Length: 483
Image 1 (cartoon, rainbow, N blue to C red):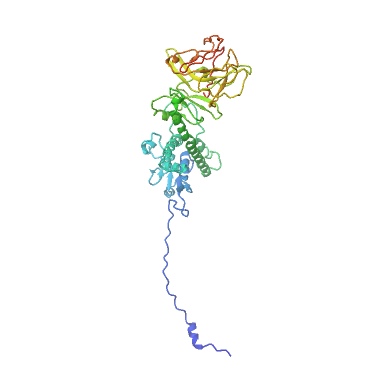
Image 2: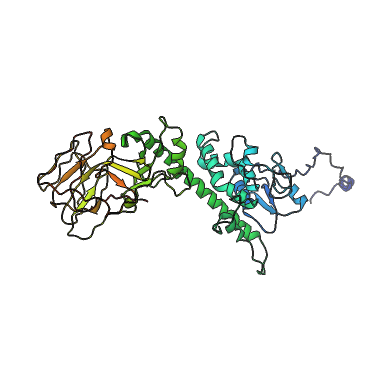
């Protein structure tokens, strides 16, 4: 038999258990409010406040610029006019009636606000009243551009593009939002309806749309201005700024192109050279005013362009003679002789007379004629002038770097190879001549006929003198492209 249950243990088992011993005391943590600025991936995103209702280009650009910065990349856009909600935002633009950069409040609608780029940033010349876009660009522009360009804020490229972007992008937004006209008085000659501000305004709902919600339109407006801003920065970084080096190199070598220094040859055409030329020209030593720029276009054609009097003017400092303007290659037919002019070094000089203006053209050219049209390339001239009486091309030592243009020209002996070398070296060459001067306003019929041809060919021109061109029965035409 098994052992029985001891009765003495029964009261002990029925006794209530003793109270549990107190363990370590746990303190309950107080709730921590989310920080206003994003300090990590787990923190609440920043909030950018602006007004609701109809939106404009300045606050759309201001929000888009802030979102390009790392600390505001995931920022929430709060569109409201409630002061309590705006007070909880990290940055407030274009609303609130307060400008306080220490608290990141950037409004310009208060009556006391008259700040410009010049007043807030000494040394800047722009006097346009700032909008919310200009205020954000003023305080965050250098940091933003340094990030986009992949360099430091102290880099000179950042300062150059900073000024360029404000002058050609942000200032327009400031002026339009503040109602500043481009002219002081008078009626506008034309109406601008495709500006960035106008395109942003058209993203608002129309008056007769059933849905008047502006949130989706504001998001599209931020995308639009952000894309425009980034494209403009990319242009100034990769196109406009490298063109400055080309212009500097061309100005340094201007006396190798022409002794006067008034002609500049760009190593590559199609670049934005005008603004750089005006800026660098003032610091040239000795001082000189550039009148012409020659270059090859994207198709390899040589072009001559007159320098305007002002950056946005259509009036040239020294226009080419009227008969030369707009001429291109071509001819009356395949049976007519042709001429190819290879402009190596040339100069245009103007003498202001009492009743007329004479333009003397002195150039070093290679003339090739033949009876039928030919696509054979003209080679570069040898160093010394030679006269070829046989029907063969001159032997050239180097390849021609200039693309010549063909124009009709009548010779007494078609098919003859002739060279004409002319330089502006002596004072006697500067005197007006029939072969080197062109009277502005003088028609083709009024010009005196050239002398009759002589049986023997003319001797080559000595170096330093201007030789007469081959006798002809027709006018002498020059290709002047790009006008």
